[in-house]
Image (cartoon, rainbow, N blue to C red; front, top):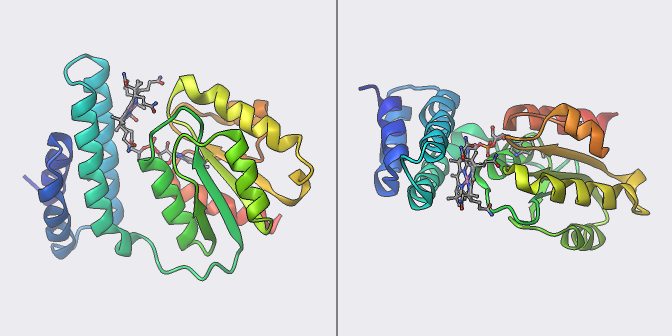
Amino acid sequence: MSKIEEVAALVEKGKAKLVGQAVQEALDEGCDPMDILNDGMIKTMSVVGDKFKNGEIFVPEMLVAARAMKKGVEVLKPHLASGSTGALGKVLIATVSGDLHDIGKNLVAMMIESAGFEVVDLGVDVSTEKVIEAYRANPDTRIICLSALLTTTMPAMKETVTALNESDFRGSIKVMVGGAPITQEFADEIGADGYSDDAASAAALARKLVAA
Ligand code: B1M
């Protein structure tokens, strides 16, 4: 079994205490950090999701796999993201109301920070009101990023984007959306400025939006 396969197996089994060491060993063997992330962790979460959908595992198993992935990402982070200067301005990021999924949001935050932004992470289950309050507290914000992982929380994303579109500060910010069920079509329909399907392209899009 390769080191990346070992990481994948440990994430799938939710072995949080062992994942960090396996990730470090994979790095020591010269594995590309992006391969460890994509093949060892993100693909594994899809496997976990499929097993959940098929009734082979339940919420607690999904939860421990998520915890294990987070441990692995902690070890990987310095190898994926360079220190940020914050020079490109401030970004607010949140998972929308009713949605507790944060692994994808955290990766997007990490890559956007690494691309040169200062990131204010509002966490998960963030209401429209909280997003607007956070903007009022950070009026130098240039981009608001929203993540949703559930089809049932897509309406919450729509509600927040609609409120932002109707706000008096809309002209000063860009709005980016993403997450597994989100599509470019949905982003256009709700009036977001941008959509991307993974963390690296989210960082590239953020740079493009502030340059526009
Ligand atoms: Co949940 N869950 N979950 N879950 N979970 C999914 C999303 C699901 C697809 C599993 C399945 O059935 N196959 C399914 C949703 C089905 C649907 O809506 N159609 C589901 C369900 C049903 C649920 C519950 C309802 C289960 C229940 O209670 N009965 C429940 C809901 C809780 C809630 O939120 N209110 C629930 C709970 C959980 C846990 C808490 C146990 C745990 C989350 C822990 C955590 O995040 N801290 C969990 C997990 C781990 C998953 C899966 C297995 C993995 C998600 C993940 O972290 N993926 C997931 C299955 C799957 O995704 N295939 C599943 C890895 C991550 C890196 O990918 O988040 O997609 P992702 O992020 C990507 C891109 O989407 C993108 O970039 C990221 C990096 O490349 N991206 C953006 C994300 N945000 C972006 C923002 C951007 C741009 C790009 O710009 C702003």
